Length: 441
Image (tube, rainbow, N blue to C red; front, side):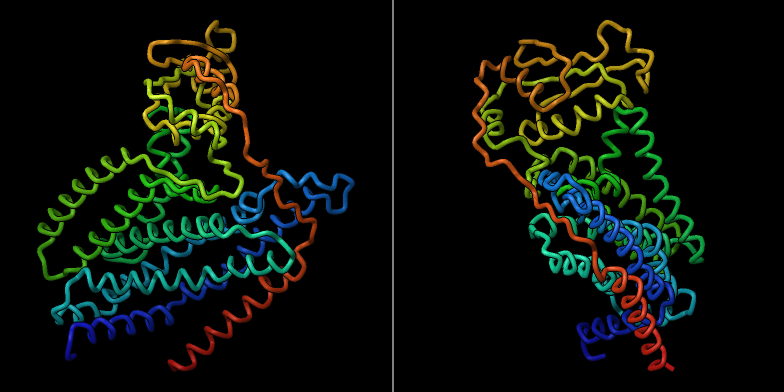
């Protein structure tokens, strides 16, 4: 090899051929079609019925947005694929060289371990992009039905799943590099995935610090992207985890280094990553790319809130599993934090479910403190929260001037989708696998 560049190109081609020979890759491709098909067909049918298909309530779908009604459920198939299929593809690509002995031959070439791992990551990224053609076909079908497409929110959903795939690739690469056998790496990867789900479950029951930690899990991250919301702190934390996972994998792929040294380097990297993640939690910018601004207050309200500089603290006497707390968080406080990131919110409850606290005198109260002035109400709506804040600040509520979002109703059945995802897609994947394997024979 005459240059580092030619060596890297050769390595990329070698990893591409390894991917094409991987059965797990073809299985993931084969499964993506039906997974997306089930989600897309069900979403379009529900959307059509809400828009008045085969009914007498035409126009009900005016309040619906394709982002929540179609794109979120359709792209949820990507989340399943990233959790249960992509890890096996990544583990196969990273651990295959160790199992075959090819890694020892590659290590004889003076190429940095991170460059080697970078080639694998690039190939895995391209593999995910190919698999993402299935939801893109759903987008084309939706457009052919006459459905509306708002590119910023659609791009946000796709970017969120791409970021989630990056987390999966980094996790799979690190576990495959650390462990001796692919099955052990698969178990470790699944354990971490299930662990994030447990954190979400504990957060839903206990609240508090668990709730804050759960906001950075892949499930929560994907959920925000699927609602058109991009938070810089979440993106920064995901990027830091992806980078650290790939670096850990690169460290453990240096088979010639003593295990103790690799362990020390991994511990140091873990400490650095933890400090980086903690620093990222203080980043506040966010962007709402949804067409109906579902993550934001009205623009007039946001302008009024930005003029309030006194410190705001909110104390809500609601249990973690109380539906009113969920409404308060989703309808108002999550939007308030985007405008007033320094606002302090504290939940108070004696139990997690709140059933036996209903008779308590103060249960259900929401106290607002703005620069020493206090008021209380029990409303969990956005209007109730804004009214309390404006009252304390002595600000006259602004007149809403934004045009009301009327939605994009579409009462059309998903014609042809079943044939595409259940027939044409699997047939093309099987034909592609047969063609590639015949060429290699």
